[in-house]
Amino acid sequence: MAGGGQRGFTFGRSSRLKRSRDFARLRLEGGRLGGRWVIINWLGAAPGKPSRLGAVTSRRIGNAVARSRARRLLRETFRLHQREFTRPVEVVFVARPQIAGRSFAEVERDVLTTLRKAGLLENKCPKG
Image (cartoon, rainbow, N blue to C red; front, side, top):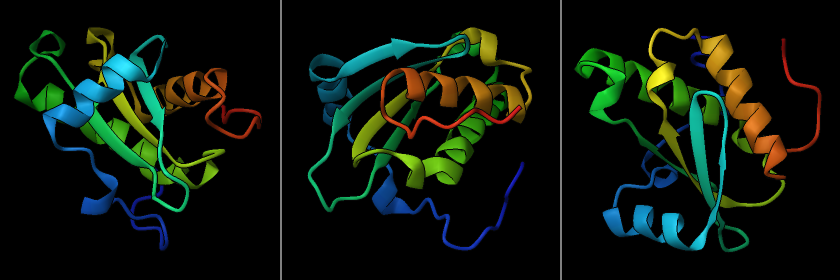
C-alpha cells in the first residue's frame, strides 16, 4: 500500500473506535454521507482529542480475506490523511460490497472525495 511506514503517520490504539456503543452513537447522532464504495458516519470530537476511526465490513463483501483487505484499505486511507481533517472527528467507514477487488488508489480517491463533500477535509484537489 502507498506510504507504508511513513514517520508521523500512525494508527495506534488511541486512533481506533472499538466499542459497539461508539459505533451506534455515530450512526444515530452523527452525519452520514455515501460514496461509491464507502458510507461515512461522523461526529465531531472534543477539541484536543485525536481523530478516531472505526471500519465496518459485512459478509456481503466476500470471504474473510476480502473483508480484511477492505478494512486495511480504509484504515490506510485514514492513516495517511488524518492530519488533513478540518477538526477532530470520530468517523466510521462502512464498506459497500462493491469495494471488493478495488485498488488502493480507487478506494482512497472515493473516501477522500466523500470526506470533502462532508466538509471534513481541507478542500484540495484529490490525487488522481
